[in-house]
Image 1 (cartoon, rainbow over the protein chains, first blue to last red):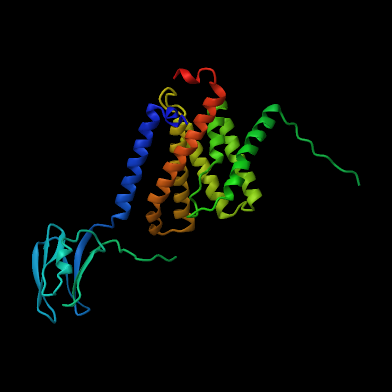
Image 2 (cartoon, rainbow over the protein chains, first blue to last red):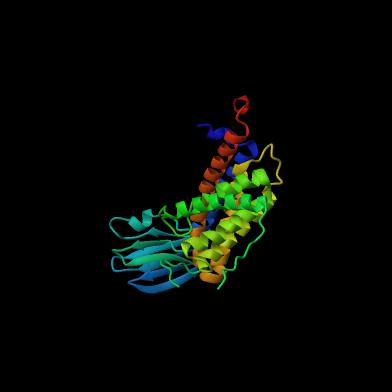
Length: 124
Length: 179
């Protein structure tokens, strides 16, 4: 097999560009849109919708106590929560539209939403 | 009733074109038997012939072979004038445009692999545009773009390598080992 001998210098340049282009397409298209607001739910109902433009800390009451949601640098996270296993707190900062952190025991969730609506299924 | 015979004058060049297109046609029929994980992801083996024809006989001949392959291939598969036919036609036209541009790159540096990869990207770009404008006008199809781009990259490279290897074996047999 002498396959590499058939790839000239310019060819490898084109291949490199092709790889970069494909990776760029994948990251931009599959990353999800930029988020611009956080939807905070408590007990299944929308508690507040806050824009990500201002840094803010919000106390959300739940059956176990108060969850604290903080928004900073266009990102949102659950800073503290009374739930026993702390999954939603450990999830950390949410950045992209469609990301969600849920504290099930305290029935609190925060979801990021963008201007372009994300779909989890498509139909036509 | 007397049988009327329509006789077209054909030149040796026509016969040559027909032979090349027939080989491409054979490859596309062969390829139709290969199952595809996603509609539209196909190796495009017939393009190996187009690449070789481009390098040997120029763009005009390559365009003839490519378009004959699309039309005759659709007749064989029974998809003539169906959406799939227009998709392959547009794909072929975009590929030919990319080949017309890329064949002027210096041959010393750019070979069949470059032609093949660029044509593959042009092919899928044209097809996705037609799909979006005509068949599925929904921005959701953008989610498939990275898959198609990756397929174009992989199959474009493989076809280009096959074409380059084939041309090496037949063109430069005596000097092959000098490189």
